[in-house]
Length: 170
Image 1 (spheres, one colour):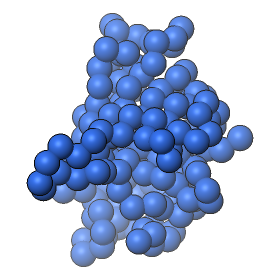
Image 2 (cartoon, helix red, strand yellow):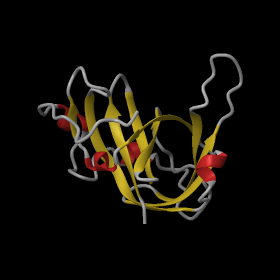
Image 3 (cartoon, one colour):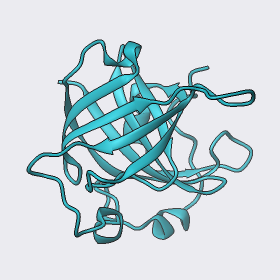
Image 4 (spheres, one colour):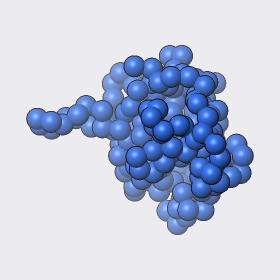
């Protein structure tokens, strides 16, 4: 079963990188407000460059001057089931996440570019209705720390910078 990871990352600004293992790489979206377990909430997810699969385990501080400089934590990880195998090409990815924090069905829906200057990299990350949906608890507040180390982003940010295990794929 393919893996997924969500990395909490304070680069230029705080965001969450939602990554799905597909076709030998991590397809990646930057989610400025982070994922939600509330099915009525739609979160902007901006597609970014693919990452090597080994990057999924990276937690540390990317040095100044490198792409994405700043602290990175493994906020969630697990396996997923692809519910629409041709969904990426068609602009609607549906997955069943089996993570430590995120569980159940999620959709990534590609938005259409509306006009000049618009990008085709904008998607929406949406929690689909299922038994794991939770409209009461904000999972970002209730479970803010790393599933890998148990540390906060500030604790990770206080350590010496370390280079990530790979370069971002262009």
